[in-house]
Image (cartoon, rainbow, N blue to C red; front, side, top):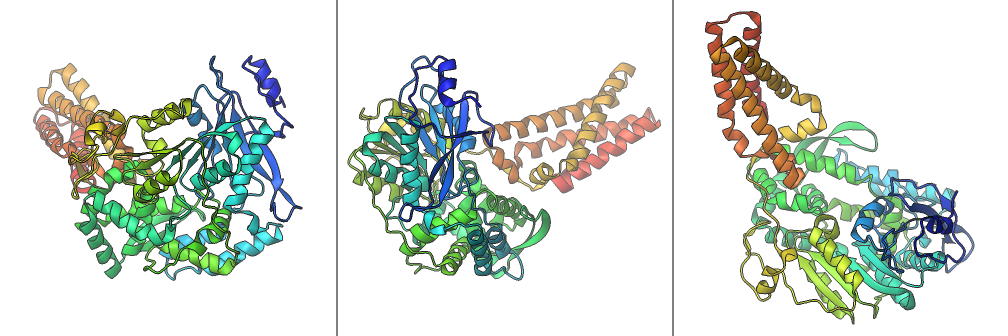
Length: 594
């Protein structure tokens, strides 16, 4: 396989000296052109050298004529999330720099990969009856990993940060720009502290400071986010209702590939919604969903239950719990009521594993740091990120409205600002501030004036995005997305309407032609409105369809009346069939879809 040095020379870009090029390997995910993947061999425990492990990484070489010598190195959060799949996305953000995506040791694309399906299955089992034993599952996972020679004490933040430092030296970069999100902001800040000469700048998106108590603060963070969305009281009412009378929700176990009926309490809803709120599209939709749940529309719980299951296959839970049990759980007091089943599950795993606590580093750096926060982030809120950023000697902080967790994934303006910061990290930015929202504000609502609002008004990056259009709440679009055959009546009606329009026009039968025209107009308007909603917020289709679609029902009704009227002049079977299909569709649309 071609080495990275040969690839650079062949593409005639400014050369990069590599000191001891690490072994190359096929990339495990789709990556852009000019990307090579490999493994960095490191000690499993630097305090007890002996066994080595391999940390996966990818390098995308920039082809820009003004290619800069210092790349951007990125790591995803979690702990336990993969990074390589974002290589192309990051290459578009930083086109004039090489992009290095580095995996966490023990993650999916490192070796060994600390998957823990036993624990993931037990966490999902918190929604079953009887409730699964998380501690017993954790012991089975730990024992299996031990038999494979894994020492869980080596999988912690300080070791992951040391891997980042070792990778820079291995690849031969004299300096680079660190980019972390959520959990990996801790990793990157530790790496910057450990390698001051090798770090040009640091970007911390959704900053999780060492001093933040992730578990102790989580419930308060969730309630605060609901308050900022203007639905705190309604949210608490839904939680109380479901705690008193849990809902039965059909869902799928992604690990076993089987359907089951989940028992969802209000506390379970809080847990799942807290995770879902990390997506800015879900955040924008939350006021609609909570209001519908207050009204008893429990069919909207199914997308949340499905998302909970799918989320359990996105992390390597052996790595996740190794880090949490050493770096997070020991430094939380757990004095508040643990209503989140993930919190109780993590505590049960850590009690079973009995790993030693890893002393917090409280790292700092003199390198320029750009800290970003989302206005509706329930996991790493601005209230903890801002003071931590202010404590760094050379940091700037910005909060982005209408955005939740992982700002760079949802906000194009934030991506542009990140690139501008990396280009000139020593340039002092103009002061900006996010306008304060009123207590009853929803995403996209007009902000109340506050200090800094004028600066925010002049910066399009700090303007709240457009709100989700008015929705008619229905589970039909989500069910169709899971089982496309459920849309067959719509497709059949559209086809019959088109045939009726053409044949009626050719034969001069006005009622039939106008009936077909009405049907074609209805299906076209519905398709256009749904496509427009998906373009604005695709997640909104999990809760309903545009409210205008309800008004279009009168067009479908007119089509049915005109089609039936055509029977006075044509009683042959095609017209009878068209009438039956049109009438049946109208019933299906009104009863099932709406």
